[in-house]
Image (cartoon, rainbow, N blue to C red; front, side):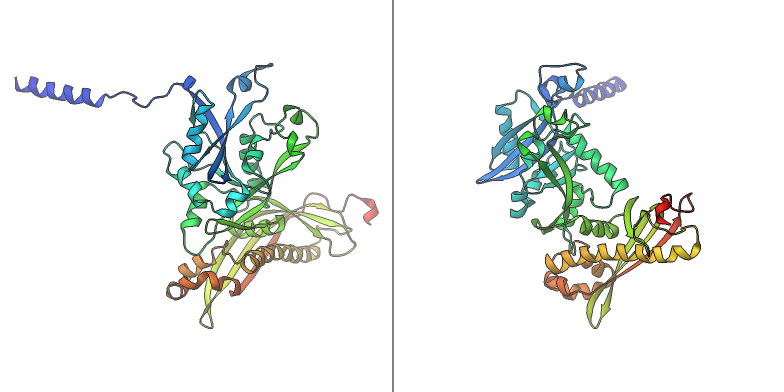
Length: 399
C-alpha cells in the first residue's frame, strides 16, 4: 500500500512537469528576420527589418514576389516598440534568432548607440554573435534595402563577405555585438565597428533589375572602421589606417602588401601570413609609455622589377621595405586614433592596467586626457619565407 501511494505521488509530480511547449510557434506564424537597421528619429527610433520571402527563395522559376527580401519599418520611442509596431503591417510574428547583421545609421551612431543596443543584448530570442555595422554617410534603411549580386539575401552577402575578408584582406575587421559591448563597458579601451557604404545610384539599389546587370548601378561595400568614444561615433579610419589597426588588434590569416622595388621601378606583391602582435606598457619618467611589437611572415606573390628573388642578398632589402610598410600603417592608425580623434581603440589603457597596475590606479581617472600625449614605440619584424617557383621576372622588358 505504501509503495502504491509513493508511486502515485511520483506519477502526479511527473504530470505536473509535463507542461508542454507553452511558447511554441508554428512556422506559418513566423517571418524570419535576417538583418536589422536602426536609425535615429526625432522622438525615438526607426527600425528596419530585412525579411526573407521564403516563396521567392525556394522557387526555381518566377513567383509572386518581386524580390527575395522585403524591408519593413517601424517607428517607436524605443527599439522594442518600433519592432512591435511593424506587426501593424505584417501578419506574422518577427523571428529574430537568425539575424546575421545589425546596421546602425551614422546619425544615430554620432548621437550614441548605448540605448539602442540595450534591446539587442537583453532580448532572449537574439543570439549575440551577429556582426555590427555602421552605415557610412547614409541611413541603415538604405543599406538594408539594397539588393546584392551573387546572393539572393543581402544580409547573407554582408555576413559572408566579412568572413571572406577576414581570411584574405586586412582592411576590414568583423565585430560582433558581444565584442562591441565588451569594449564599450571596459576600462582602458574604446570600441570600433565595421563601416559599410552604399555606392552608386542609391535609388536603383532596391530594384531587382540592378543586380541582373553585369555591372550594377549601386552596390554595398565595406569601407573603413568606425571609431567610438564610449558609445558615440567620433570619426573613421580609412583603409590604410584600418589595416594598421588590424595588424595589431587581430590575428591576420592573410593579406596583400605591394612594395616598391629596391631599384629599377615596378612593384613586388607580398602575401602576409601569420601576423602576430603584442602591446606592452612600461613606466617612463613616472608616466606610461607603450610598446607595440608586430611579427609577420610573408611570401612573394609577384615581381615586376629586374631582380632575382632567389638570390639571398636580394631578400633582406625586401624584408626591410615590408617592415617599413607595416610600421607606416600601424603608425597611421595610432596617430589618427590617439592624436586626432583622442581615443584609445588599441587598448593602451588596458595594457597599463595589466602591466603596471599601481600606475593605472593613479592615472585611470585622467586616462582620456592623457591618451593623446602617450609615447608609442612600434617595432616590426618581418621574414620572407617563400619566393615562389620562378627565378627571374617573366616580363623580358624588365631586364
